[in-house]
Image 1: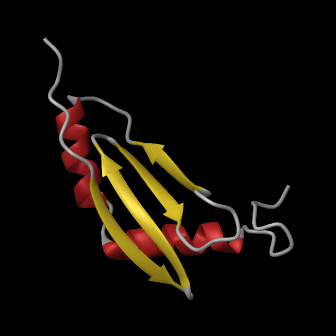
Image 2: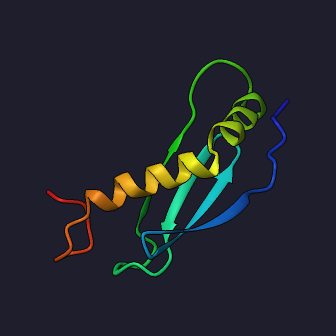
Length: 89
């Protein structure tokens, strides 16, 4: 029997003048840089571990607070090369 997939949730953030969209789908998340220099550039991840996908999705939703999302976006922006708009090599 396959697990039921919940619909994706989306929240937008403006951090240091940059707009990002956070999409959480099941046990994965994706930050997309909305007005960045490179279309659809961003970062994401998956919450791995024990339990069902639904358990991990609920855990991820609780862990990804506005404060945590803002912190992750700031860390990403800190590592961006202003000349290219991509992560430093």
